[in-house]
Length: 252
Image (cartoon, rainbow, N blue to C red; front, side):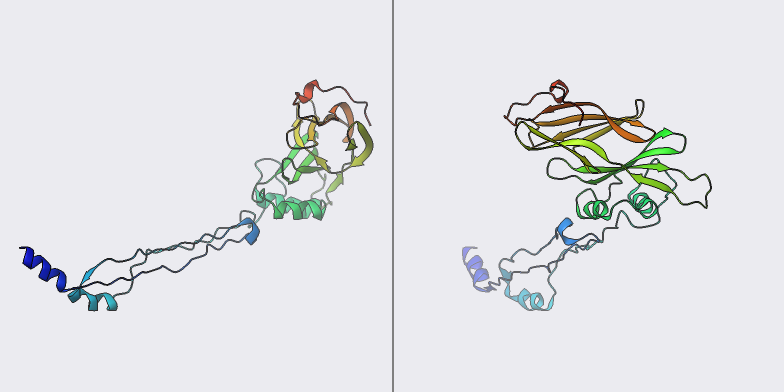
């Protein structure tokens, strides 16, 4: 039996063939910077093959697993509904953008960041047919910014919509223990709207850990914002304190 085995080995031809499947890049409708390419390769090396099988091997195509290059559907594509104020989709946001025409910079930031595909728009009723519209523009590194519009539904369907970009009083901190008054339409920070109280609270962190910043609550009179309360910690000392316990700051 040993002799037969040796003869069997002598009659074999060692064939080594490495088969690499074609690289297939997953194509998406979003820009390349938002959708990393997905590459797939297949095909391990073959081991020893008997001589009588070598000819059939050369004539047989390599067996490469099928890879589906599926195309992801653009979540913002398709018709949107600029009459809805709840259960909004990304396509609805695009329709509202065309209708209310908020700043292009905000929409460009939205298109270029990871929140693309998430509606990131909310309508908060402050009176019948009157809304504060919160539009998130970007997430940022540790916090993003949003803009806010006062929107009045037209009484006549043929009338043009009325929307006004709101401006908020706040502070900027160029350095520790220095606050400078300013007005802005871009509110940076973590924002929450209380529909029952009709208040907007924004926690603006001066840096990622959140050990310094401003906590501001805005109320609205006839749709115009004003500072109700403001708390701040202007020294970034690495010591985290609940922003609700920060000292009060005079309204700017």
